Image (cartoon, rainbow, N blue to C red; front, side):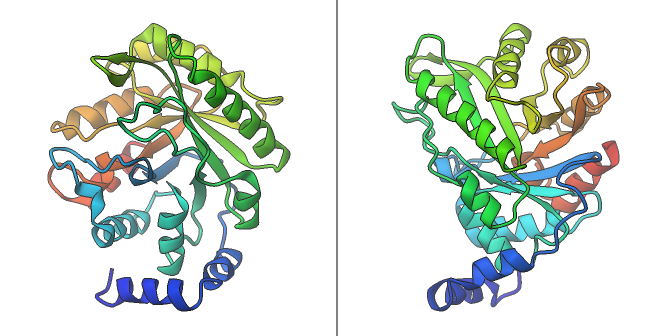
Length: 293
């Protein structure tokens, strides 16, 4: 970002909020929402109070820094899209960073990180009507299933409704499913083969059609045989979740490389691993991921 960009964004928001809708309408859209090998940069973590990346628990709290990293990533060859909440996507619109990129709005951010109600993940972000009005390519939802917590049920139903409504509007429904449980009061995702497979099959069955559903799943094990077992449970197009920032970036890239060889995998959705790499080189991390694709 240039020195005056932050002030310009705030001035526009204060004096001419309608400019955001104008820029969304004028955005030059990609040829197809999703079609080739996708590399989508994710930045919807802050809205659920999850600001950490690597060893820094507040890494994503600096909005100017986050936007700088996002703009750098989106400008790299091979990056096809972005995922975010309204505040972030609108900042990127005001910065002119979304042309020719697929844009996915994050829908349910109500399950705040660490909250007692975390599994009751309300749709506090984009709705289907707003995604269609802004001309975005689809919506993403997080689905964490805890078989021991009945607060899972309303989230499951809300996700099913969103999948159906997105499909009716001709928009991609990106579903990120986990089987989860609490350990010492902290909600944890179960990344075993069995749990990941169950989560995937639950998500694939949501809604009155799966025609527009894409799954966003973590890489299990080393990305090889275990991952193949998980992915073998569905024919739906799948995008790999980047996960937490690892100190061993080379090992992370190797796992992605293995998993990307499965026929249902269409690309990557990566946030902090690319935006906050251990060596600080955003462009280098993005270029490496694009090279794997």
